[in-house]
Amino acid sequence: QVRVVESGGGLVQPGGSLRLSCVASGSIFNIHTMGWYRQDPGKERDLVATIDSGGLAEYADSVKGRFTISRDNAKNTVYLQMNSLKPEDTVVYYCNASIQVLTTRGTSYEHTYWGQGTQVTVSS
Image (cartoon, rainbow, N blue to C red; front, side):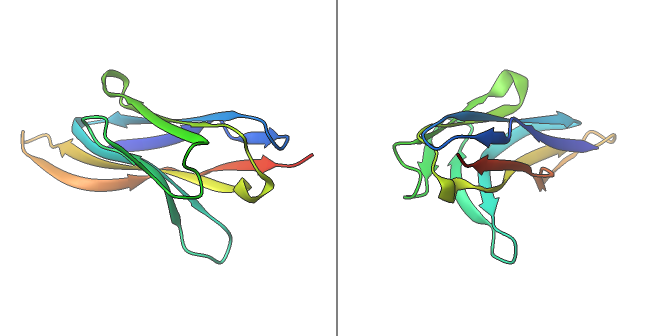
């Protein structure tokens, strides 16, 4: 069993900063790409940033220069440092991880996991 759990959301004033964390745990053989997405109610889930196992990161245009994604492979953790936050960044953020899961038979398979989401609210 594998779990992906986010933390770090909350309320912040415009121009402020927040750091989101996401930890994967369980029967993990390897983690490929990890990322952050966000979703307004009734809308599709949009990519915010992704980072591969080698550290190569990609960002949505709307967050370039303000957000930084990083990961600690030893801790199976991905972070999203969000600076210069704007009211339009208010939304639920979801962690995504492409994980090679180790089975009890010693085989493995790849599966994409989502966290439960964490609310970020930017308001004065």
